[in-house]
Amino acid sequence: MTETHTLPKDAPEPGFFKQSLKLLWADKPAFFAALFLIVVVVCALVGPHLLDAVATKQNLRGRNAPPFDWSQGLMMILGGDQLGRPLLARLIVAASNTLAVAAGAVLASALIGTTLGLIAGYSRGRLGEAIPRLADVIMSFPSLLLAVIVLYMLEPSVTNLILVLAITRIPVYLRTTRAEVLEMRERMFVQAAQVMGASSGRIIARHIMPMILPTILTIATLDFSFVMLAESSLSFLGIGIQPPEITWGLMVSQGRPYLTNAWWLSFWPGLAIILTTLSLNLLSNWLRVALDPTQRWRLEMGGKKHV
Image (tube, rainbow, N blue to C red; front, side):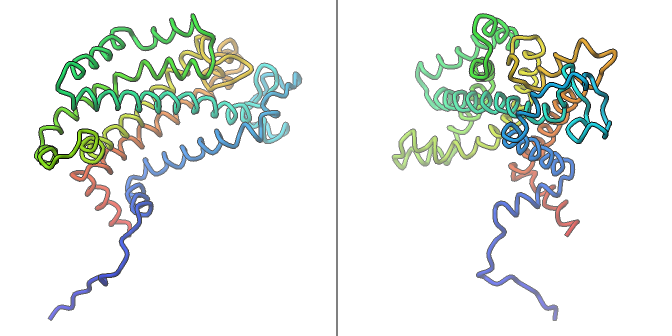
């Protein structure tokens, strides 16, 4: 007779955090992308409080100082800018504004767009037909061109930048949510809830929203990198955040005149933008698989190989 081993009935199931960590470890590129993003977020939260004075201190003797010169200290390891300010400190401080604009725009557009999409998808009256027209109006203008026009008329600031970028991204969430809800509302579990007398708000909150949340989270992760690139483009054009505030895009713009003799002024902030957007894309791909019950087994099987 073969002896079978079973877990005790009272054995606790793996926690959500532990299970998510196992799934993340099964996808090595996504795992290291998540580590990099954690470092960036920590720098954005802590950097301005610790290095703000260092990042703004001018040292004309260190103008356009080359990178990897240990004689000038750790902060100058990536070189100095046109005013002798350490690029490493400025990169860390600039991460705060860069991520604040991207996170604010994504959060605002996701909340507004998803709410409007839920109403438009579940409503069968004129409201359900009128709301999608709002998305059509916004999408009739190129998003970057619309941001340029609005920011040219308004004062460039973090708040205005978040507002403009959020408006341009609302149609993405509105149309995606509406399409998902239109399909969900015809399913049997929704119709059963209606027969049981559940209100529209309860059906949306308890039955429909949990089903579409993975899709919204995946889109938001991808949209984060798009918004960050849009902010960098606007700062590069000179209509984004203005000095003395700094972002990675503004640092690239400020280093443009020195590309021939001090390439590192634009290279390091440009590399930070590339690595952050790449990490977000890798994490988005992992999130799409991890939240899909039909594909999650790929990560679970990959994780068991390393046990």
